[in-house]
Length: 327
Length: 277
Image 1 (cartoon, each protein chain N blue to C red):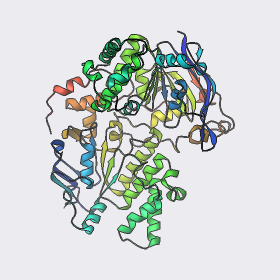
Image 2: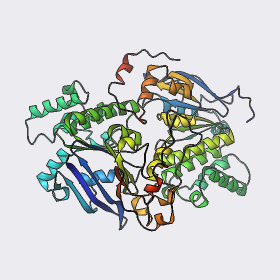
Image 3: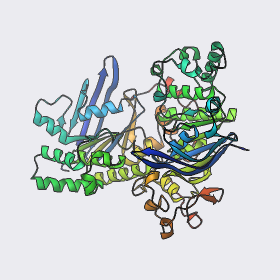
Image 4: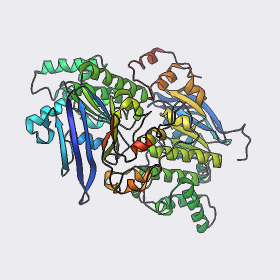
């Protein structure tokens, strides 16, 4: 497998009240053709900013260091038609479909907008009906004439996924696509994404705050904290063999649906944003395993076992971080 | 608390809410005793928040009764005193800690306002009580005097909980109160809520769509769908051995270790005949 998307040393700073604040720091990862990578973290950890950086949707004034390349091309070097083509090959599905549709335009106008420059109206419509069927929406002809407010949240999110598929993408950037949906609809939408990905060999960058959800649909998972990736490894083993203390703490803090805990293993303090991170390890102030060396210098991200980790003590801690089994 | 466990602290009978022709809540009955914690679960549109709003008095029931410690509160209070008494019985903590606090009021001032309404003690007594409440929810002195915008989401939700507790309610309604919080903060607030219940004997009604949070905090569950209760029982029984198809689908949709999303879970749900319990 070759790398379809490769992000290397990505550091992003945004202007906030007359100063440049760091939102991402040295983010590096790659996604192979057809691979699904989960990006997990709490609010402010930089997961959405990572998606925005990849899609070139950062706010004006953002300072970007490092490189993002797609299929061997530098994404930040793309101009005009090349950028449009790139965005069709790597579309974004956002969390809130209502905020990303025009309420006064019909579903059909929205879906076929990107196709209209290349194919006829009738062809565009036929393609739209076909992809709607792939995401489980029958009666596509009628749906295309409807307005966003006439569809439920789950239905509209499926329209967004169908729209992303319309241009035969190679990578879908999905930013918490199911967070606003009811759990039964989330299961349905995730199953659709999973099926389509496998059927068409589309790669996926899946942003979520839910470790279990990431594990269910991704090949690998990267965990973010304070604008940095702290660990990357196979999604299936993240829960049983976490490399970074934060990953273990995050998995342990979540209540379980199958057992009541006497006390949840809460992480003290609150999640930090990248610009607040201290000089050493960003997680050090909340970490149960902190030592003096952790607070002296920022640990580099390095290869570890079958993934990467940003923790000085990873070797010593491995095995002891295992999340208590929920019976 | 003084009453024997047999008398319900909250008793809801035949509660119904219609908005025009639409029946949002259809003839539901629940009751909880002192110190119990009840979860009302369901998906969007199931009517769970409408139930919460009727119990707290923000929505007037179309039919049915709501009694807290034997006092009916299903009709609007005719007098100010009655209204204040009701405020002392039931308090609510809303979902969004960013919109439920007055942006110009510190936590200390919000709590003092509630204490003043209860006419208990001097300004110094009230300050002492406010500081105690701050301790209880884990807010330090600086945070108690800061405006909401200087606080994080988790801290704001602690302020909302402290403010609600200042009225010393018998029943605290938690309307998706931890849903907007990050996992690490959510765990802190859930632990806090468990401690408060243990120490004060307060009763909770948790409105939630998150079955894991429900499992952690509540002894009893009612599952709502389209305005009716489709299943009820002890939390471990309902979650481990659901009897109704709808509850089974809800349970099967929760991601966990080894979980895989499956299509068509909802398909069987539509035809099934739901038997209200």
